[in-house]
Length: 265
Picture (cartoon, rainbow, N blue to C red):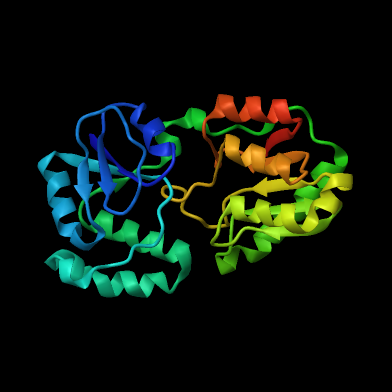
């Protein structure tokens, strides 16, 4: 089946292009990584009908959504007929949180005849099985991770975030719309005295019920560096459902900075 990568920001679209032949779709206003390949399909959020036609013209039947992408704004004067008809659905979905919006986007793509495939299905090497990737967590770190998992599970129905920071049982940060890096910067600014003595753990995992075809949590070398700057000593990720971008660099960074890194069910 012919495949296209709908590319947002970051390294993931490029890593997925290594999985095999695929077209690349970029969006106006979104800075996608530059890749050494033929010219991509250039799309606009206001002109989804044109994008669908371009995909069909190239025989595309599978789509993979990859990379960070902020909520689009629409230039009403530029809407094509397809997008104008879909806009009420999209605007209503925006009021249901990120998860609700993504589900609506997937439903629209499937209605157009495209199959949605997950990044981890194309690159299963980017996720980790349960176990220790870098050193072994201490009993205290495991206890903090358990606390973080419980908090994230309780907040999952509210569609809040995918990460938490816990030290000595104290919740120091919760990821919100601003993302993991902003949460870790908040910990640096407000809780460094606690983590300096106690260390702490970053817990990263998908929300309960999250559709992992389009919204997979990720960590990369920058995440490791930000966790170390926050004084943390461990990172727990969800086995099989957090992408490592890229795996070798993530592991090397955790080793260099002295962070335990492990995957838990």
